[in-house]
Image (cartoon, rainbow, N blue to C red; front, top):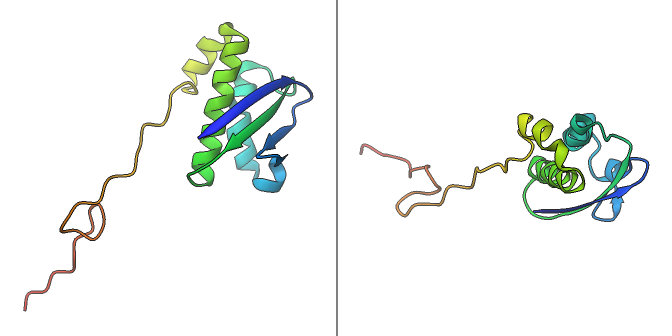
Length: 115
């Protein structure tokens, strides 16, 4: 889950109180988070402050991206068409499948022995 605030500024990204580069070092990570700003033509116009919890690295980055897209939409409703076309306003609906009784995990069955 991510809580994102956009403040007019020079484009710095702060995640959980520390600079983005300290937490996520890869260029691909930065590109994921900057996508909504890039599509809306607002790259370098806003500072992003995000608090994120739970999930893995990719899930956190995509939650931040979704939060930025929704914040941009609140600032300027004209961005809706661009962001919607890029699929940035849609939450990722995938969830962990529950474990079933009689199985070791959601789908992993105990080893079968013929004899």
